[in-house]
Image 1 (cartoon, rainbow, N blue to C red):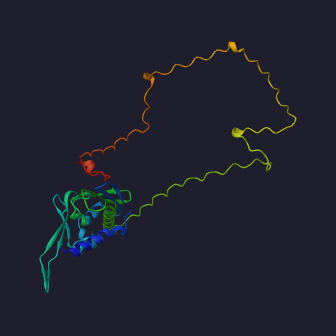
Image 2 (image 1 turned 180 degrees about the vertical axis):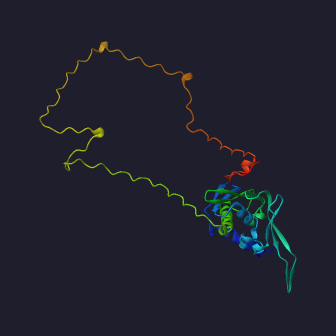
Image 3 (image 1 turned 120 degrees about the horizontal axis):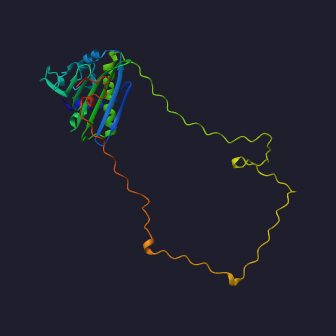
Length: 299
């Protein structure tokens, strides 16, 4: 593979951000050295038709995302240990001759016909990084047809910035599942409901009928202010009691000072934040492996 071909593939891979996406596509998880891309679509074809199309990548995988530039050179063996591989054709031209080459995109680790396909491998530019990628493709029967889910879980040290490479990979996965689903009859998915808007605050209460510009405002609780009147007499002053003789006044006893033992140190105002909880361990079972299936295969 020449450096120019590698650069072309990498540019197309990262340029997938503008590719058409299926009904549901998103990066569901992202850390400093890992991310998960999930894409979903529903088609009218049966699970058997979807499976037969899935294991024939030469018919739907986009040529722009191959090393040879032609999806016809792709093949997939749907059994444990089988290879999702690509042949690099030999070149026999005047002044140039090369032997046939090959690329292993992914290796099959689990295959349930008409149900699920799981492969391990680093796609595209990720092949140059010490990362592990697990692609789980799930097929399940739903009310409107057959649901297809692509989930690509990538983790490990890489020289790419995670926010950038994760979106690029998600774009490629979205483009591939859309290409697979197109001849199988895509079922339109309803758009997500619009976000609820906050109600506008109510205006100030209207003034009561007949109130003039100089009318006093209502008091809290519904009380009404008393009207000013010149005929209301002022309350008579109460008689002031004579002060007691100075000899009968005793100074108040001073409160005993607190002893040092009674003084407690103040509690710290800010407590250190508790460490973030670790993610729960996944259980290893057939049900977990096919968590996206509506009809899980029997163990």
